[in-house]
Length: 115
Image (tube, rainbow, N blue to C red; front, side):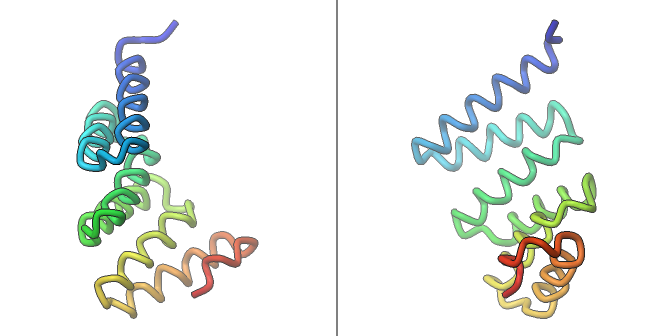
């Protein structure tokens, strides 16, 4: 049985996907924020919202979301890689290098983390 809380997260997930696929990125970000509000420990929502913020050019906001992923799941290499890319876009190369190095440290099999 699905509780109302979990059901609300599933509905928010459907809205996120729909809005993202139809190019309504602001609505998709709002839907991810709603999913985060329902469950602060769902790092996937932070990751998706950060990715979308990057697509809109809001790299400072993307960094905030990717940092949220790292707080919740510090062993998730992709979040360091994504945050590193965001740092590159705002010319914070030293911080980008730190994040890329951490991503490689966490997941040496995924060579696309190498810049």
